[in-house]
Length: 253
Image 1 (cartoon, rainbow, N blue to C red):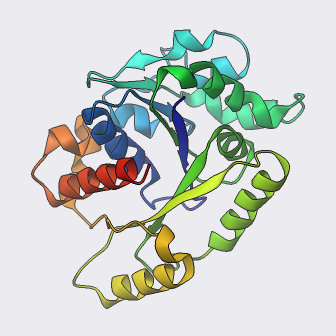
Image 2: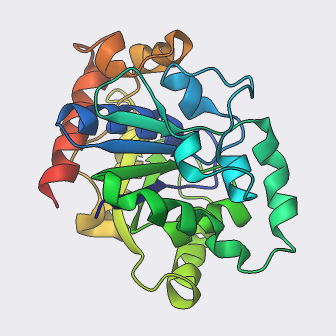
């Protein structure tokens, strides 16, 4: 059975989607069958992997609402071993529609459980909030990767995220664990980046990945070309970093 990993942080712009897109691409290159679930109505994981987000394809919203079978919303990405379950703008309404449903926190878990045996890794890209969609992602996952950007206010709101993870573990998903903490947007020229790194390591200790994701123009450019960094510029420092992260993830079991 595959591992379902959600990349979560309620702050926007910390590298959740960048991490899901590029980590999944490299894990797939390792020969692991990999699925990306885009749980964010903005659909940026879709566009980052070359799939349009015009809403023409049935996606996660339709599956959550029971309108379509799960196997009908899984699409190839053009990269070997990598598939995607896309979102579209309809997903923005799911937060409201789920509120009055029975077992509303388990809707995504049923979808993930239905396909888990077909994949080695399932990566879930979560929205920048701690609402019902993110709760669904936490309930459906085995573990959480938390990206933290090396900038001002990096740790702001982190206690709320950790409290939410612990509540989900206590009440809804007892096996949920912290997979790792990923430092992103690291700038070697900036003392602030070093200070944030020191703070994060002091708090999370051995749960912080050895691999650090640097600020890199190529990482920022790649999504506009609908490609992960592994195909857009495989020799860039951003590509090397995500390759190293994929290796670390796989070797850590």
